[in-house]
Image (cartoon, rainbow, N blue to C red):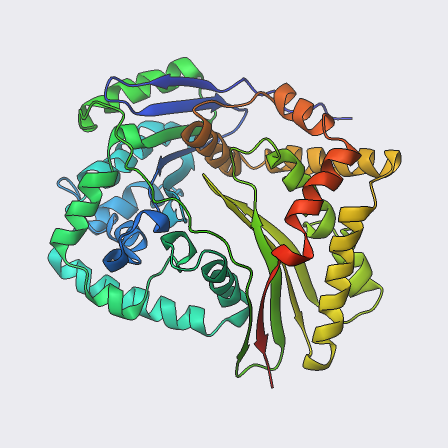
Length: 417
């Protein structure tokens, strides 16, 4: 039997300008480097809806040293990838490349994040591109309902808004507004540089040292304050949609990323409707009754709150029945503690999925960076295992009693034809 690939432990550090960094050496021909900025949808003012995502698009439109074509070709001509994405609380810009390209990739990454010039002529082009993206999104009810549901959970708060913004807000963006937003949030102390690849930590630090002159010196621990989430009031809404299927989400608020119940919430969600085909929802609603092709549960932890729920797409004549079956699964989690064997299997499944997730070095790069950004530390594998093994049937039942309580649930239903 082949032995597992040995990995070094992540190494971390802080640059004089406050930029935190982490690198993990792995046996690989490729490297992955990312800059994760602590800014997302929730950091936008009411007149800035969609601005974080808009800036993510503009990062690749030219720097003081490179035109847009040269930014992309520098990495992609060598078979690599340069990309970015925006979330509710962070923005990630990353590059994947062959190991000999480490220095080039890091140079390009730092260039686009710290030295983009946001050309005026590119603003109008990207407004059109994102406007088309919004139209495409509106045409996909199975995706749109997730954002509409979070808007329901966090009514009136920026964390519930769609990441893309609206066409009206998009048209209001000026270069001055872009530059002001970047100046406020894109500071070294407000981000993390994360790397996973086939070079040692010592080699990485040498590459990083050469790139230091390209990183602005803005000292301090600047981290803009965030508006606390608004009080939660469970709500039920039904919207008529011109779709064949009914799309439904039932759920509510959940624990934050800093809550000591975080690991328990991850396990409950995985048991209920995670990616495995033997999840309770999949076995009891799709396989047993055959009334839903797509059913899943989700859990999204944020800095000071969380969102959880179950999505199901089904025919209109079986929609109510599917909801009752989902509620039945919630009740089981609240009232029936897991047996010794069930709990052991649930823990093993979660740990196995975590291990498989780390086989993707690109995923590992992002996970390490986010951990450092959110917690200012990275748990060892032993610490992660200890948290999972510490979970008890009683503690999971207690958590489920709060999270899946009937009076705490909200409903959003897209009613099809």
